[in-house]
Length: 116
Length: 115
Image 1 (spheres, rainbow over the protein chains, first blue to last red):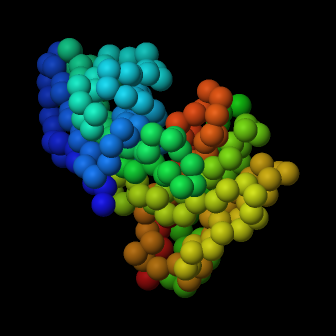
Image 2 (cartoon, rainbow over the protein chains, first blue to last red; image 1 turned 60 degrees about the vertical axis):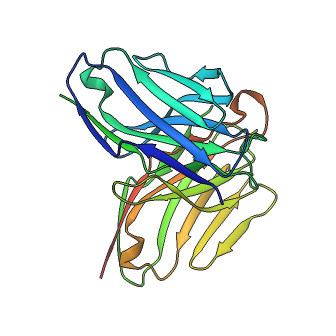
């Protein structure tokens, strides 16, 4: 079965510090990978998605970037964190065929980032 | 046109009651409508989903009702239990076009079921 791992679970970082969040998927090949952010415990905002190694699409201009160095690894980064980057960051995956009734989106358990 | 509007923002139900959450969309290209359940500190988990060629999908105590002409769909939780207390998200996507591979989420409903 497929599993998705995110770490760390919680992170407290000062303003201006760098960020690196990692996500890996096991049990599947060539997945679509996604980074979402959830602010104030509510809505889900798509930040980046990737359909393959080195292929990243950005949804929202921001202080963040994403990379996919390996097929099942997705990394969210920032060079200098802002207070507004605080939130709950979720990695997700789906089959390469895209989202459908037979290919749902699966989320990891997230990273709670607090920028102080 | 990409929005999915969800209501209510919060809902309080007594144990054994029916919880109803509604969503409306505008993009007629949407063809996949899942619902996610999220407990505090956890990622959302797929609860139930429906395709637009059916009007209702039932799994246990959870039912999706879909009205294509009105561009609305809803989640009904029968015999609501305290363990159902969570945040629920509706979502939609299309198999093609600019929405390919992306889910558009509603803003979420915080459900509290009192014992």
